[in-house]
Length: 554
Image (cartoon, rainbow, N blue to C red; front, side):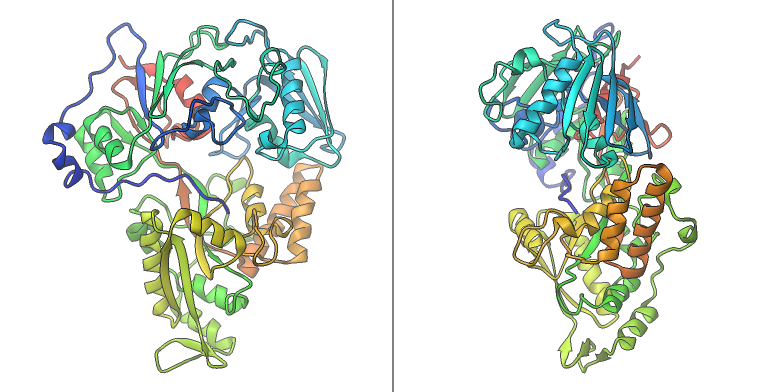
């Protein structure tokens, strides 16, 4: 489970918007002038950090505004909407050998750094040696034995154990930096990188904490690209961002309107669009160490009692489709990974079954209409971040639904930091959580089930915060990681699906989505459900793919 970046906006047609004047919601920004390349206005955060452009540091401005790949590129781009969806990038080909313990990259010809120097395998080797030497830079946990360059266009990495599961982190999430610049840096963990030199489609132009400006890199390796002159990343409050979306001042945003104003946004102008593709799973996360959640029939009863469609419609503003498979797989993205025996198995709301499960486990209804055992009622607290309005709404609906089957749930909203600490240390009964996302369904199962990254209550768990502990499940995770063939990996995945179905360590609810609102007044070519070449949100690694597909509007 991880904390997802989220953007929620209150109603903007009344209240805030009217207070700022009717013109704010009626004037449209003019399109780009004919014959010129457009500038895109993009929402970032509520304000960035000091001027720091080190791509490895989570606190840098490039990371705060999710703009790393616009300057510093990876070896491979991944489309997480499709299983196995990849785009050759700085590397044109990659192969595994020696039982997935050797990874060889062939690099692209003709790539130059933005200062005009040639990109070679020496840069790639230097980058990985850098993150191996400085743990603070290795934010994705890349673990390898050696990295070498047999020639200018070849890089070979070796690993102690099969490393297939690291491909996304190695090739997709590691920004490649130039040896000629970074080798002179005394301490890269403190380097502010004031003049970033990258291979990406844009170069740094200017910055203040509320505005990061990137401009077209004329030395970019894709001929004729980008067809966008400049990217302006704005640090805006939620309210201001929503107002600017409706007024047409913004072109691209990672937002949604909590009051249903998405429809108003689209109806307001033919150039206004939104697309929220599912990229993960939001689950009800039971602390498996807390009674009675430690009892399987209780977790199963909770799952059976929930109306996921209602949670979607009323709690998630209809934007997050209900999960229908108890395997927890992201479907249809990972249809090919679904065990055939679970193809027709669906989650069905069944309150009678929920009560039967509880009664079969020895629970009886007390005078208050709550199931109890040994005089102890099922009385639970559902703890969520109070700032996540959709999660707070969903939690209230979950509590109401569970009350109808004799389970008492109190919703407790806390600050984001407090929530993170409680969940990591296991000091909660129930919470909501988003699955890890990546290029394989394995990353979600690993995040939910890997006990090696969990721990006893009171210690910080990095994954498996529900503290599910099952040796047979751990073996399946290890089997996947050590598998040397696709068939062996698929067998392990099928086994992990069985764990979800039979042991209910967590309770899948709805799909998490990537929020993307965008305008076609200046540019066209945005990803859509019909052409899902990448997630459409500006905060994903695939945002570079999106920008390079955009063309000036006619």
